[in-house]
Image (cartoon, helix red, strand yellow):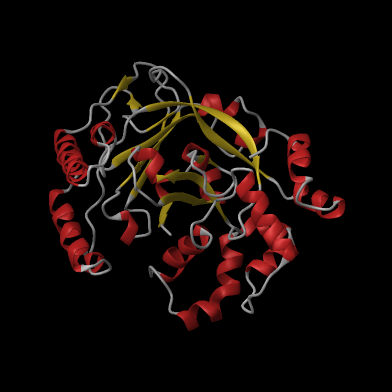
Length: 349
């Protein structure tokens, strides 16, 4: 993460010779990150977790009924499948992930130009089902334009009950394994997360070697996709620069909470998954079909953009919790403000 181009050039000079340095700097991708701020959440302000601020009469959203819960449940282990079927039967609301003050984002300048300039974007996700069901049903993004009479929405009773039960189970496990019990009590669950006020700030990031944007660096792009393996000096230097500058995995997980920009995949670029689901109607393609369709999928993925990248462990403020949710959207749908067409992709290493 870099504040500006001079900062990036200075920090990266230790990793690259001058010609390569300039190529890398030219490939930096602007993005918006969520920086934690002290104090209580301000009504209408940007935050991670907690509850959304909405106008009179607003209701906490719930997922639409799945067409085939049994088929989704079979994608997991027997135990996971059983839990998913129980979750489907309860028809619980989404967990609330984030609120973005669009006025604050607009004040950052061109980096936020793809977004509306007024209101708030509210992000919801079904943590219990989403990892097994890439698509639009497991996520909801609401553009709330209520100018006044905002109020903090109270979680529905059934959602709160589920959250309390899940948290109690986490506390029990912490006690059993002599872990940090107080952290388990204060942390989140699969249904809620502690509310933390955030300040939106602009940054420049090195594109991940798994992202589409790294194709601006052909040498890195080709080396990362090489099937022959072996050492590659340019790729090793690039990956070292990513880790050193907090654009990879970091103990400061808030740095992975990101609006717009290039995704930081845990596997492959999540936009490929979005193309597969929306074009072929499948969660995954078989190896041979993927190979034969790869060029088509990669080309179509360029029509999509990252809307929000959410690190689940940081959102939940829970130890040993992993995974990232990518809310992605076609660029023309974003321009048309069709947030109902967002696709959520979950990845975990």
